[in-house]
Length: 384
Ligand SMILES: *Cc1c(COP(=O)(O)O)cnc(C)c1O
Image (tube, rainbow, N blue to C red; front, side, top):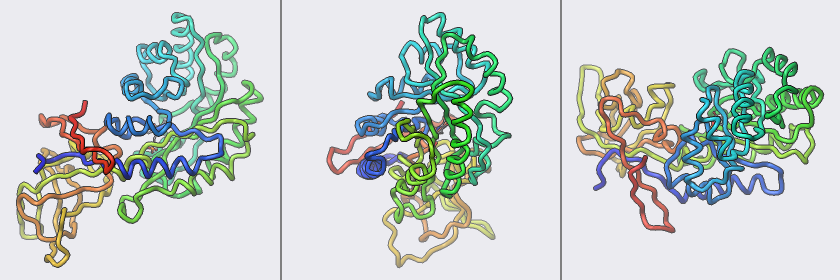
């Protein structure tokens, strides 16, 4: 048996997900960039770049991952509220397609660095549309109180100076309001805000030739087997029907979670069962270092015993990891068939924001991953 814990990726499901996504944007001017931060596993990146998606990066390191995986530089977009000078220089030298700018000072710094490198930077302005994404507060990004995007104040300041920034070409707008959004009315509201803001952009800056609406489509963490592929149809339909801008303008999307979450799971084994007067604890060999979301956002992941027999009696368990933190808990009072030392547990929907968020806290080493495809041999990889 494979040493646990490890990430298990179902590349067939990834391919089905990518095919469904592509079917829903056929015959449109929609372009999808995969948000690398969701998972930068090499095998996964290779599949996604082969499928023809672009890449959305939030650091110089992610731009490197994207280039190494075969994404072409003009299909890469670069966002982030705190880009360093070195990252900006790296992006300009590699002719990255678009830089999404989040503050006036950042735009001035890009102007300076572009002057030094003898280039003109093509940028889009990330605006904070103040739309409530109706999701967990820690993954909301498009509300006034969030740190992301140019504020209205900064936008007005930019209008006074943008013509003096000779190395900057402002071509459009970027938005990203949050993650794990399941209520499509949120995207309708985003479209309404965009419809208001595009004429304002065109009056004050110039013709808009680029629009990026970000990512954020949610997945079903409760029933991953019933809903392995997110509802791309309703998602893209919302933008098709609600955006009133010219159909000639390309619309870019940045989807992370919805592309990869359901194709991955975390396989781990029970180290110990321990009982108190009121509780049963199952201590696993995986912890918050391999899957941080429950500790960070109280996120729910479906936990199952692998190869469970339904006739087995079931008990309630607190499913915990080995890390020295009380928040290192994957679920409380989880109903599972009776567990014993050595049982294999699978935690679903770990394709996004699990491996990419892994930590070496407590001296933990990076765990392995297995990418499985029915069309190719099983490949094992230790990941960087
Ligand atoms: C994280 C992020 C995304 C992807 O979000 P998902 O919820 O995974 O789709 C897209 N754009 C930006 C700017 C991000 O920071």
